Image (cartoon, rainbow, N blue to C red):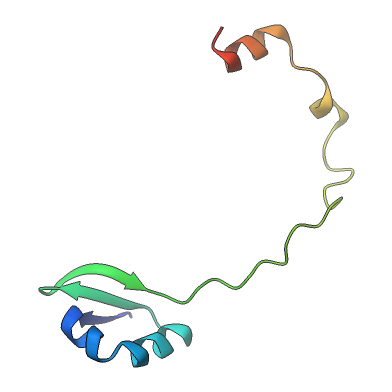
Length: 77
């Protein structure tokens, strides 16, 4: 369950709230008691792109030129 913290308290406890968010706790920042924003940890970095990881999974038809009707639909002609 996320912790709800008013903005005034968040200003005085910001460093502690950052540590809690970094540890995985979701913190809802409230303004006048109403939810206003969410403080959450950043998602971990992805492993990045891996060239060739879809090799053999994309059919050759994918690389064929599109029919004129399809091209016209994409180009708004």
